[in-house]
Length: 451
Image (cartoon, rainbow, N blue to C red; front, side):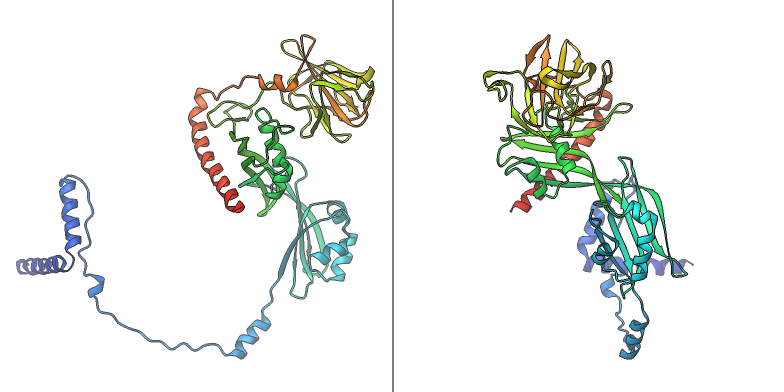
């Protein structure tokens, strides 16, 4: 046994000498690691196995016999594959026009579709619903699936129309959960916000949210500048991997006249979510800057020539041009003080707020609240119309403090912001840090697109 240990030791020394001769750097690294480790900790050393370069190389040659062309052609002839195609339903679609766009040529399937109650109710005439068709290589229908969101919940409905084993067709509707992902986008203002978001392929619902989020800092009716830029990160709600609609804006940046405004969606535990600046101040003001979601100011808080009375007089409110029926919302929490008809105002709603403040919504086509009712900020109180002394459909909006008329824009900007609570600050800071990176990426994508 002693001789065996001696032989093993000699073999080890021989290999070490070989390693030192051929790989001095590797040995130096090992010695350095030993010295730095001080002998007291765990450490790793280079393998003392033979170097792969010194191992014998053996070449193996094997002849592979390919399948004959005839056999390959026969396999392809036997193989069957299905085709998939997607489209969206149009209001004027019939079964035939829809199948034609989907590349389906199947009179039997078309007849079943025409007589299927679920298809008639849930598909035909439903603008924008996504449809996917699976067909054989000779364009016969195998399966048709339509997806849509019935409401603002986190679920979607799926209409499945498919061929049975007996050759007929059956249909049923399923409900399934939506999946959520996020998307980065950006754009540059050339004429209006909606024109810029359309150019960038951003949904209108996201554009509307951007206008709402920054309404306290940017007057989208009067202060937009050509060259203003924006970046946005928003949710997309997907069904079976297909995007169905946009969700909430998660973070955004708007650069107006060289000044950057940033926003981040954050929800403290046990509270409603809200938008905050990236340094943690709430962007929710006591009053919104506009009672109409997105429209054009036609007459501000100033002297003007009255179109009906034909005389110059003070215009003690703000007029918003919008189509008849456009929703009008409360700019702040309050109680309905009056809801009815009043002289030149026509159909009018008056809301009482704290500190002897009142807002007035006039010329409404309909009233959606009653006297004494409590309303919250953003709640619909009526619809744009042209009742009373009005030359066309618009909303006349007033803000009064102790009975004295005030400029609504000034009041909205005077509201104080509330910061994130100290307990939620660490979680907020982590989220804000991540969103800064995403907004930077969105801006880079926008710049690359522009270049």
